[in-house]
Length: 355
Image 1 (cartoon, rainbow, N blue to C red):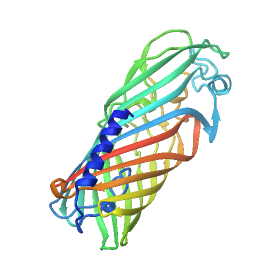
Image 2: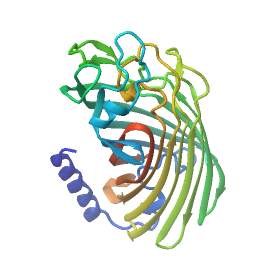
Image 3: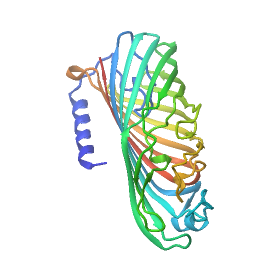
């Protein structure tokens, strides 16, 4: 991320901490780390607006949990489309790195103490760099190219339903639906092994949406003590049907647990573990066909364990109702149906305003 942006954010957070005055009714850790969604509820009539920025960097490829270099990929990894006209026997285009920036906009409203409604939408910016090898065999590099896509992703609408609510513990269920507002037909120019530059439909990781209506389910728990808090959450996305392009994305599951400590009433630090899994794609888009791993529906499965550290800031006084947060996340274990790009890091920044 741009160093100027980071410096500006740090200055804002420092200003908030120095200018705010303690308020016994405010705890910075009453919200979970900013990377956890749908983890808190509101009182009757309360609204909350939120904005999160997430940047994720991926670099290098894994086969299972082992690194694999581009030369090995193009000489040993079979091409799913081998035998079709113009298709080589092995992969001949290899992704080198990918960056995804996501701008997430959220709205929460509580019609009662028992139910909080949440709506989320996001704007995505994706870029992926590749290397293309010449012809159908060998390790002669032809050149490099980059593909990009950007636009609105899928939108979600959810209800959080309180099951337990006390000063010491809170538990709620999450029930919702993901709406297919993101594009599944993004295109860009590529470099083929035959040194041609056609504009084609981009592979699955570069698309912006799912194309399907998907149930969202979850369960969230938070516990509180004098200067500490902790919590756990499971959330799942279930793909129930194929989209208009004849495929459906894999189910996704996130199981996370966190521990937070108050430095002051208005500043808390957190550590968090998360287990993320995503299944392979079912079906295939007939317009996505290339000698590259990202075009293969059976090379999309992910099993990853991440660790994150974060800070939460709650403001009072003139900025009462504002919250700021940051979380930095790195993987400690990855097992991929590869070859696939491995995740290097994620950085999440957030601003929340309660009304």
